[in-house]
Image (cartoon, rainbow, N blue to C red; front, side):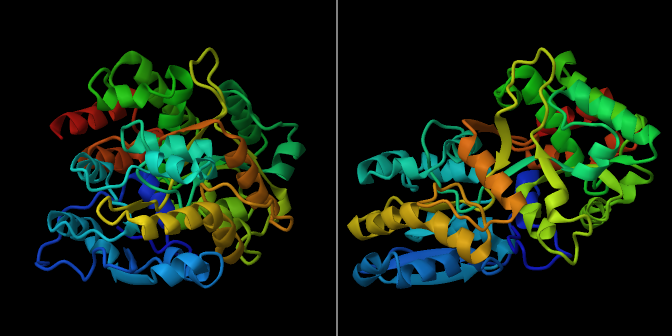
Amino acid sequence: MTTASRRGRRLVPALALIGAGALALSACGGASEAPASGSSDGKFSYLGQTENTTIIGTLKTLASDQCKDAEVKAPLTADDIAGTQWDQQLQLLASQDSLSDMQMAAGTPSLMQQFIDAGQILDLTETLDELGVADKILPAADSTIKALYGGGDLYALPTEFNIEGFWYNKKLLADNGIEAPATWGDLVDAAATLKDAGVQPFAAAGKDGWPVTRLVGDYIVRDLGPDALKKVADGDAKLTDPEYVKAADAVADLGAAGYFGDAVGSVDYNAAMNVFLTGKAAFFYMGSWALANFNDAAQNQIGADNIGFAPFPAVEGGAGSIDQVPANVGIPVMFSKKGADDDTKAWITCIAENYGDVVLKDSGVVSGFALSSEPTDLPATTQIVQDTIKNAPSSVLWFEALFTSKATSVSQTNGGGLANGSLSGADFMKLVQAANDEG
């Protein structure tokens, strides 16, 4: 798993990769010893990925200030593992009953479920209630984590929380008499108007595939309801069912009309970002991890104040709701049940109460924690995200979230075919369903 988010503008953020399902790891051979880890009496141990410095940096800040009392009783100790070996090493630690007091969660939901089923991970629903800080987790983040791990309880904390939707160039829409689309029909009409005016409607990374497949998943949950993809994962429905194919066909129709631009199959993440931020496309479906790009004046030539946000639109007559925000939790953290003594619970309390404020102030990261005070100096795009997260009653997962690793790969490999019109929705869904069936 690679989690070096916001480390350079030429790297795809880890949040995008996690949400895209690209972090499903196969075992990496050669490792025979677990890293020095596990709960130690009198200490609070944290294990993270070498590439990610945001979480440990925030914890160190908390240890020196807001969590000073917890630090005195149980000093923070940290270790790290390379992201490429993360899931493998977590499995090794779990097999030795040596998980740290706190660590970044597994990259694959199925591995997390194994830890949960084995009783190795702390049930945070019970713990946060016991500590009186359950209200510090925002409802949308809470529902995302619960849906991701397939249960009714919370087993990780949202150190990051990312919403997804259509970012748009306000000027291009205004110049063409277009308002932010509220329905899929509005979006299609807007795309037709823009193309007729010589404006590329959508920027998209067809080469990477996952930004396009996101549209398929979002259409499904808007049309069939928020549990539609879980029904596929549970075997109660198939992607090849007509009502599911309808979603892929809707996206394929956009591609066939040329709304994603020329040669979209060769456009990668960074190129798509550049297309939008240089004013060459009106809409850009992307997650809020893109704020780092939007707020960088060197990259953003259209101006941060010129960027608006529209949630994925409603599908006319659909069972889903436009306020069910597509989201992912980026890099959640879990706690070992074995290490959950009073000292660890003091840390959990302090993290729940203070992490969100500190990581936003120091790193510009929007988390799934409620803030103790509303910041007054956020960039406009960041404020949009913060307000959307705070007000969202629930969330929905991305298209591949509950797929097998093979189906995830097949989906993303063929997403570009939907965007350039070379693949029908029915054929796309056949390919992905077949991969899911193979396991």
